[in-house]
Amino acid sequence: MNNIGSVTAYRLRACLNGGYDQVRGTAVDYKNHQRDVNVCIGERDAQMLIYRFSKRKLNDPEFCFHYKTEQDELVGLFWADETSRCNFREFGDVLAFDATYRTNRYNMVSVPFTGVDHHNKCVTFGGGLLKHETIDSYEWLLKAFLTAHPNQPQLVLTDQDPTMKEAITNVLTESTHRLCMWHVMKKLPKKVCGELLKNTDLRKRIHKLVWDVLLTKEKFESRWQYLISELNLEENTWLADKFKIRDRWVSGYISHLPICCLMKTTSRTESSNAFFRVFTDPDHTLVQFMLNFESAMDKQRHEHHVVTSDDVAEVYEIQDANMKTKVVSRHQVVLNRDGNIVCSCNHFGRHGWLCRHIFCVFNNKRIEEIPETYIKRRWRRDILPTHLLDKRHRYGMQNDETSKMCSQVISDVDVIVRYKSSNDN
Image (cartoon, rainbow, N blue to C red):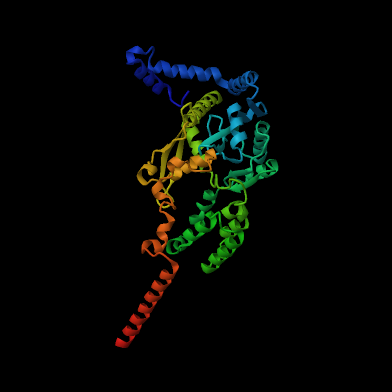
């Protein structure tokens, strides 16, 4: 099921069937049918969804879901199927989530839990719906999350929502929580005088400080304080507040964590939310929302399955970001069963040495040595015989005594030439 209206559905059916005369009913009939479906769902919307999940749980013991009601109203829902649980077991070291938009007629916010898989693509660990964005609500959701995924993530990334922070601190006690760097830095123009940003390199220098994962804590603090003093920003309370919580968002303070650079911002969750938004609508019932959510999950998983192994070869999609131009290019690397490897960039064909995209695959496959096939003889360090470097070979000298006499003659001639030059001047 996709997020399309009844009229669009009617037109699609006409296109698929070869014309409007091949479709039973009219556009009005389609709209009336949609209305009748919504009337049928009516106030039983939540009950129908819970009943559907309960039946799914009976048929699939790995399916996990929890719900919460207040005064007979559904106010919280969490679910994760077997694929989501398997994804978390393999890729759940880093987790990001937020609640940015409302997805149904009951004003419940969608909270997808997002990570990064072995193809560096967004992967979903489960979904949630919340009626209220309170500390208690998020705590309930995170506890439900832990019933499906008992092992807590190493790193949890969110925006600066204080309710999320409190809930994570109380529930995910084994995880390190950090703030999205982009969300912090995007407020810089509003918190610092515009003229100062325009007439100085403040923006560039602050970005260089906070994004550098190799910068030690001591160097960051000294350079930050020097920058603040140089530009007379001691009275800026926003900068002072951000410095107090520097350990929660500056790269250098998390460099000790495994895979700390896998996600520095919540852009992946926002990308995931945007992906799901295509399939949902604020006017949807809960049943419609879930059908569309599952359709979105099918699409996401199908796209991931395309980049996978078969009996002949393994195909990898590699994203390559140019740090200067910020342009992201995509390349396909094919690793055949016989060991041959080819990249769509054809760097090896053009230059004779392997590209970084292939080395990414080698790293993923834990291939520690370059196959001999891809070590061109012309690039070997030892391609020339070592005896050619011996000047006795170059000049036909046969013994050490002759070599010494020749060296002495050359030295004496050099001294005479220099002496003659200086006397002529």
